[in-house]
Image 1 (tube, one colour):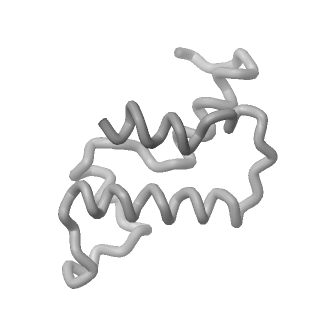
Image 2 (cartoon, rainbow, N blue to C red; image 1 turned 30 degrees about the vertical axis):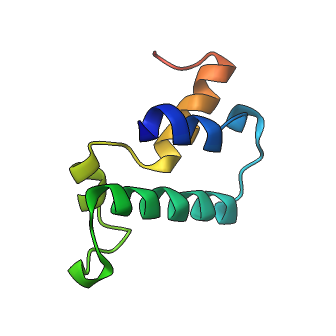
Length: 80
């Protein structure tokens, strides 16, 4: 549900965005906070956002992978 609804709206038009590191950091912060809520991971569990454990629990990629895939697909260089 998260992938189908929230990420599609969040990343709408991202193929044409000029992305700076601060933009990716904000998107990643939102992405990880939603995944933590979905996976019921609390701050007391002391799992940092840099750790891939939350991504593994939810079986989903990081936000940078979604952005790169979308930009490569738009430019026609993706393998998908």
